Length: 258
Image (tube, rainbow, N blue to C red; front, side):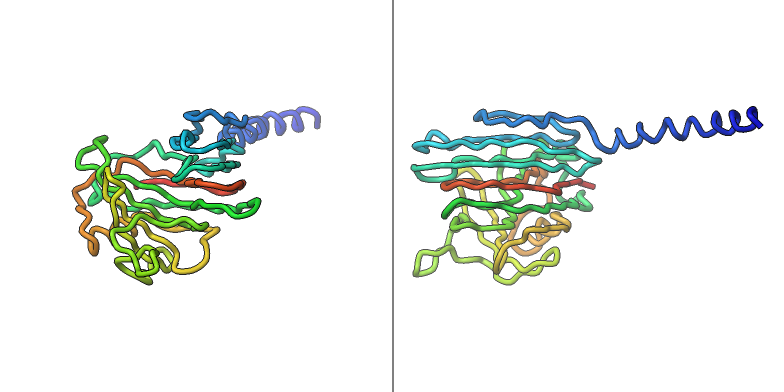
């Protein structure tokens, strides 16, 4: 009886020992400490978190701080708290940058599957957005020529636009465009360095996005003159913060290019 029981335990041992290893692979060890430096970066799997406080010199005070929470497979949880006072323009774009499968021509991309579930708490009025930010170039790894933004939320900010209504609000080049299960207004403009296409929800916010970002690129190549020979060089997601105080909590964030 003893030998049979021992034999059975020995046969099961590899499976028992393998279970923690599999769990470890799914939930990876990452740096979860808080970072507040102007150009701090934190690597995690296929992503890099960039604090990117490029406009902080225009503020009279404030900073952006962020930390990663967990990484399971390609799903990253992270948090960004920021406060900015004074000055004009965006102060920071703390974001999660994708590092894999970039520098493909748009015509060769099959999908850019993305999921982002977020919530945000604020203190008083803020000026900010929550948005994906993509860049394309005429060559792999080349200089940015086109910026494509997909805004999931607009808090008293506004997209770059060539056209404005009589009341001073940006005028879309297309309205009520249905993409990835949501309705968007599309804006076109320039930031002085490259063309900017912005998709904003026709109403409200999108606190839980799950869809193919490539559909936005396909719309632009078919309807707004973006060349499908351009290369996708950057895919990021984060918050452009201008003024106020907020904490952005992302419980689910994942992006993959195929």
